[in-house]
Length: 390
Image (cartoon, rainbow, N blue to C red; front, side):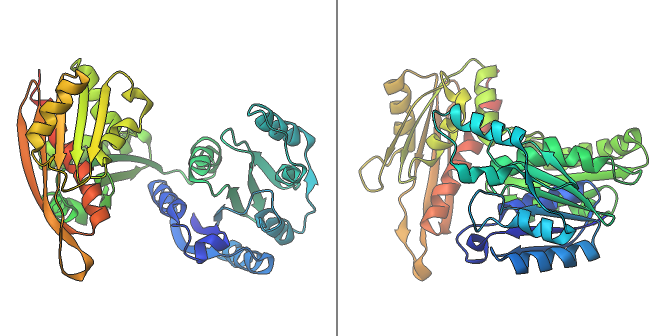
């Protein structure tokens, strides 16, 4: 099966939004063995959307669209699909009732223009959207499939996994794909690639490395005639990848980095508090981004650089004492101006509690990148410290 991804919205081609949907979908298609031919961004113009869609259907078996399914006049994906198929949309009153209920649950009245989101054409199967008001479409047209989903990432991801992908799986040829995503921390992409060495050169299973905001991901994908054979291929390569990456792997599931740290603290019956200086409070914010932080993260404080809070060990001890936690984490960076608009300094992370640990990380980068890296460094130091707690 061959595919196009169409990302629809003038805000994309205007540079106002980053197209994270296309990146996610490209990885998802690869995991299913679907060959991706093109990723195309197109603005809110009916003629252009229809033209690009017509070319995509002519070239590919699958066209996955995101965006352009809102209630306003410049949301034109439904109109383009209707024009392509030559079908006339009608309003599905059952969908209208669902949208009204969505608004009512929030104490609001549905604007009448949202009825546009209840359009349907004869060849479209509706994809429910429990996270928003815009349903998706699963359209069969001239031997191809067009999947239309919202552009809001949290809505799109859920709709893809729960609605679109199960329908597509039934249409794929008789090869079974299995994937494991190993996430690493405390090591760069080039170092990961060096450790994996010839594994990344194999065609089967495929091993790819990807630098992400939460570390370097190692995606292992195996294909075979049966699920058992694919899982056997996967098992050996994943085990070897783990062996080579040693203690750098922190997860192989969908848990966030924050959730992994919170789970480690929970398993050991420990609470944590954080004090940061010069980091923008990024590590405390990371931990507090998960609802499971309640009761585990006792508190977090942040100071601007140059305020005298420059001893990470003292910060860790103070956080532990102030908030009455089992573990304290102190993070300090004092960035200094550097040529080319960059800053440089040393991120230092300290852990106080059942295990004492302090590590420095010299860095030269943009200020926002230093703040992001401070959270990753703190996560890595805390993770390694917790590994030493029985």
